[in-house]
Figure (spheres, rainbow, N blue to C red):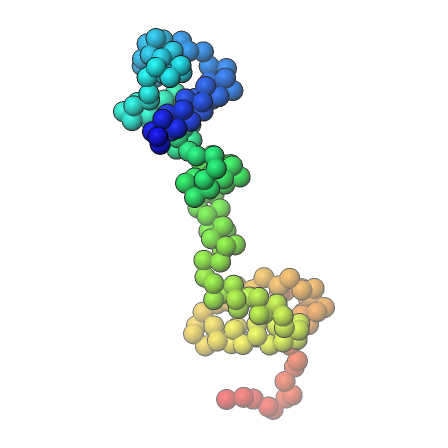
Length: 180
């Protein structure tokens, strides 16, 4: 009987939460808005937790309703403990930082698989080939009147920029030779 298993799981989890939090039946009853007898009956299996009481019990235990009813063995129904920690930590951040964390997470999992594929391919290129690709992108952006953001990870000597301005000068053109 699926309902009996669910009720047993919720009851066991509720007992565990109360014990871990050092919350007495009396204090829990006050938080939930029920009598101590109701709490005793709930914890001893004489009554089942009604759906109407689920939210109040979750708030009283400072847990989500899903934490009360989740199945331990079924990963598809819930977040793993590590994922839950990440969610809890994200909820503690100010909204602006939380948004940045989400953008970073989306980037890391490859929200744009084509971009990730390109970056993986780019990393297989030699440093000289990477420089040519970077230069091509800068030329393309310049022709579109866009200003590329240049954050060079290379040393000034490697970029041909001894002044350390973050601009690659590249090979110098011979005087008198102009393209296009």
